[in-house]
Every structure is written in C-alpha cells, then in structure tokens.
Length: 366
Ligand SMILES: *Cc1c(COP(=O)(O)O)cnc(C)c1O
Image (cartoon, rainbow, N blue to C red; front, side, top):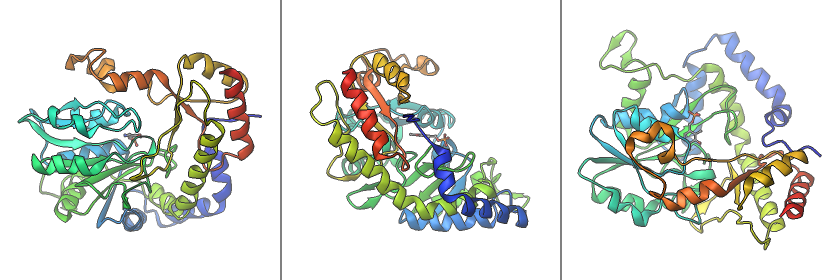
C-alpha cells in the first residue's frame, strides 16, 4: 500500500467540476489581478473567521508582513515569536527592519509558552506573533493579557489553523490581526500562492488594503509607499469554491487524528499530539515525537509510507539567523522537539486502511 505524505490530486478529483468551472469563470470575466472573485472570497472568509474584514494577499508570508508594516513596526523594534515555526514568521519581522525575539514553546502543545513571555519584553518590544502550530491555537488569553499590559500588537500566525478555535473563538479573530496562508498543502489551499489577513480593526484593514496595492486608495493616486501584494483572481475563485468544503475536510482530519491517537496509544517511545482543552485542533500536521527518527522515517519509506519533519531546525538555529548570536541551549524545548518530530501522512482523503497500515508498520519498527 502506498501512503503519500500529502495527496492534492485525490482532493482535486472530488471537486474537479466545481474547480474547473470556477477557473473558467475567472477567465471568461478576465478578472485576473484582485477584482470581484477576490472580493467575494474576502467576504466569505471574513464570515468564516467571524471577523469584520479579510484582505486577500499573495502569500502567508505577506499576510504576516503587511499587518506589521501597517502597525508601524520598523527598524530598532523587537517582535516576539516562537522558534518552533516555519521561517516565514521571523522573515516577516526581519523584512520590516525589526528583530525577532524568541520565547520557548510548551512541551505539550509546541506553542509559545506564555509563562516565559513577560521576561522577553524590553522597551523595544512592539508586537507578539503567537504561532498556532500544526493547527492548534496558542494559549491566547495570557498572551493577550500581557500584550495589553505592555501595549503590544498581537498578530496571530494562523497559517496552519484555518477553522481552528480557541475557547470557541475562531483562529485569527483573537488578536489584532490574523495571518493565513493558502499555500497548496495548507488546510485551505490555493492552486498557486495566496494568503489573507483577517481583523476586526477597520483602520488597520484599510491600511493593509493600501499597502497591498501600491499605497493607493484610488487608481494612480498614491497616498503612501506600498507594494504589490494582491491575490490572483483565479486563486480567489478557487478558494471560494474550496471554502464550502473546508468544514467537512476539517472533520475528516480530526477523525483521522483520533484514529491515529487510538492506534498509537500506549506504545513505548511515541509521544502523540496533545490537544489542549481550550482548543479545536485542525491537524494541519499530525506530528508524533520519537527518538532516532531517521531510521523510522527511512524504514517507513521502504514500505511506501512517506513522512515529513516540521521542522528539523528551529528558527533561532537557522544559518540565516546566525547574526542573532543564539546558540544551542537557548530554547531547549524547541530544540528537543525539532530533533524528535515526525509528521505522519495527514489529509482529509487519507483512508482508514492507510492509517492502520501506517500505524502497524510503526509498531513493528519500534
Ligand atoms: C505556510 C506558513 C507560512 C507562510 O505561508 P506562505 O503562504 O508559504 O508564504 C507562515 N507561517 C507558518 C506557520 C506557515 O505554516
């Protein structure tokens, strides 16, 4: 049996006619850059997130960058985030001219540990970016409380948590803004690159709208220096079509995760994902932790079961961030997890038989 890590084709085949029709519609109306299909998706996605505004952009990286810029964050400022994330979170901070400052993660949830947050705040701190890693929201209440105390902006990195919830609130709707990625492999994936920012702050929303479109509110009248960070029309139409299915896909992911949990229960040497009581985990990634993972990954691949690692090197130890002067030992939990993570195949179309085959092989190997 073959168990790919991700199977985008399987999903496309279930919605092929709808997708093809929506692409044709965009071509018919030649609404390629921004335009009505993006505007419609923005309305639908803001409703989905229970937020007043959604702004479609070109990627999740831009969705993190623009709210920082629009909040006036720049050279000399510090922005706090977690080292257990994709590098884009830190890059968005760096591309404002600011410096990323890391706070270690909690060993159970792999998200920013709020108990360590206050100690990382300095007079230069302007914002916090909690990352909702793997589809589980960070513990937002204590983070927001500290942010309010020090007057800091909170931007959620919700790039892995479409439809996730924290105490009944939608992921992305809790801080000042939420950043989503629609990279093809994400829970809601475009057929190309795309992202969006959601916010309940109308002033922030209109600033971000200007930033993503060359600082113009009227064509060729530029009130400020912006950028081209618009979403493609075709991506907007595809995302609208796919959004209708997201809830059932999320339920399928959660069901797959439960089955994995059940079949991997009480196996020595495996730590399965922990779902905190305050969250609705949407399992973008189903990551277990094991020692000596390389051997396991290699042997599973021989059985045509393909795993991933998210992420093998925490951001503070990436070569790109050498200049921060952070060495091994700076964030011990993040470092330990990075050495032990193994992401098992996870997508809505994964079958029970594939999950059973995968867990049987894992049991044999451990
Ligand atoms: C995917 C991802 C991003 C970046 O999104 P892109 O659309 O690839 O630019 C940022 N942060 C996290 C946590 C992500 O998983």
